[in-house]
Length: 251
Length: 281
Image 1: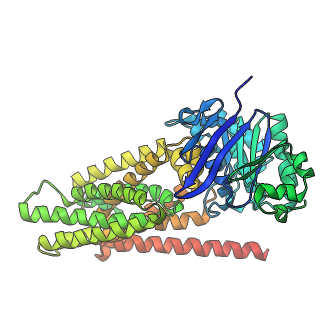
Image 2: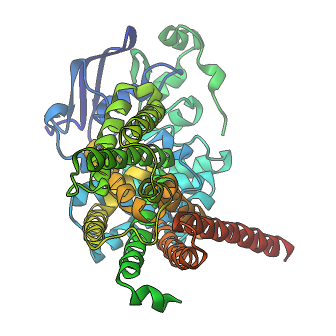
């Protein structure tokens, strides 16, 4: 059997004296669409940083595509849409095209210029998220939902096999959230991209993902989202120590 | 008017130097402004001053005429850039503190070297406010070399520098060596600042890197446009400023920066006007 896309074993992480992650074990197989939920301060963002190599591992191990993260070099296989993408400087003078082309930087490597086939990749990627008509628009002039699509196109342009999205629906108006999930579903089912979606929005996440992961310093649930939905509030609150339903949204 | 500049060799050196600086200062300035690092240019220019003062001191005390204050200025600025980066690493939570530290050390050292070199003289005033007649042939060659290095590196590392400016986290996650690229960028900034002081002077050098960009980002839609317009504005200001400075007998630093301020005002008014027309109908 092929190596899992992501395998995390006994991962713990501390910021100074504060335990952020404790003995986390996660396996994500190819083709899964995993939703990662957890309250504020549950270590979601730290976990993402560790997976992306932005923070150094203190104890435990992460394997990406079967390779220990310390030796992993094929970062272009992993796409990332940051939470910060929503808070970028809106006055930044860059077009949607320039923003998406940025996604090829790592793949091309140093001393390489964008060639015609790379330009085509940018437009193909924009087409995947339905944004090709906006290529020459200033990124700051777009709506939150359109910007988010542009950032996903940037992550897709290097043809990643594994796409990580950190709170991508923040700043996207509720009408567009549904369409946004449809687009992710399409990427997952038709383009075969493995997805990891981090969110605090349990309501809409559980209806779209194939696997659900609940994190609060440690993994409290990993399995079918429908089984999670069927659980009683008491059962769920055991995972967190308090009820999570307060942040459930209805779309 | 411009014929006078081409006729006299010393003015010709000034004009060529001005045109080179009008290109490289806004080119790098665009990255500086969008990364919100404008204050680094200010901090570094004061380090340049201490280098210049050190050079003047050497000249005065040891009659080392071979070591031009211009050269010591370049060396000090590059070292200052590396120190800023080191301090930003030490004070991760207070990165901006590196600037007041380096700025005050720069001014402190300047005061010491200036007084050791027996105080102010016209030479120093030229370094503070710029001069139309201060550029020697060897200065021009140094500035030309710096310009070639800066333009070449920006062209070859354009996509990395752009990614770093737009989204550092993304740049890092896509495998770019962000620390190395950033250090390269800061050293380039130091080179541009030390090259520019001949014309605009230490005190106004950061204006040359930021004002044309402040004007261009108001009208540019893409990043390449922002670079293009800022260079156009920079060159326009250098040409008008140098010629008017020469005829009015004012250090060109003042006239160049005021021309840039007028261009900036123009773009602000234009944008307002266009906005007004758009909302009207």
